[in-house]
Length: 325
Image (cartoon, rainbow, N blue to C red; front, top):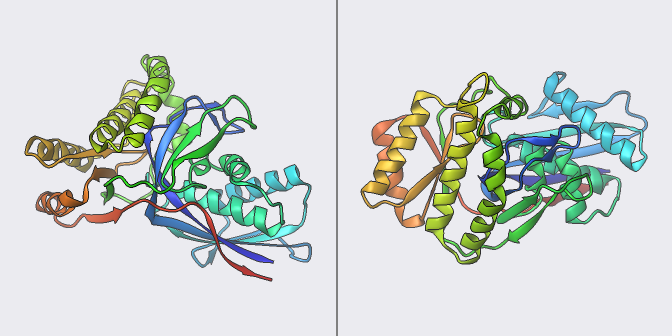
């Protein structure tokens, strides 16, 4: 049986940056995200005892590298959990720049978890899908759902999963992804999270998590774009300040990253309300309202004329888009 699943990426508004358990990918903090319609992964999972080997085909090419080992090991872990041991073939089409801070692993492992479960007829509910997606990539736990999503940190494998806050938000919210550099980042998220915990301010940030989650939940409930933007920008600044104050210090920023951050601040001063957020990479995402999109894009292109801007709205949860017996 061939199963194709489509999962969309998400952008964390309240950031996740650190693991309590690396093997189970249980986070040290809870997080809140927005699922995006512009970036997604489609994955086809086929299993058959007659296959000679396990295979991973990414964007039409068979791969045998670190990324494929991670995928194969993840599937084998799931097979061990559910009692399967046959060979498999994974075909994945990634409509997201890989390893560039645009959450390609989130959509990738959410799609893979869903196609795996469907192929083996496991009949998992979405909470269970969220749990097993987390075993591949922490942020994948949120890509099972659409709209606004919260990942409760939990304390073990059974209690760490995501749930939807509002899958069909009415908030006037657009995210503009500014693609400054889509090459793989030099410091992986996993490595960056470990180093960041050496910052003297890390525990202070953890202590603030419950309050920031509560305030973001309130902003979403009350359809408060301004407060959502303020909290998102604050969370991004807090996360990246940990990297800058870690031992050794490091940063994902490039000069153009700083340029866009300053541009956003200047736009706000001039009456165009927008906010930035940045994950593990140099690319900036701008949160704004529909009425401001044209002015913001014009300002960006006046500053960086060749940069690519992708507009994104709320995306759906994971979907099975094709089944072929």
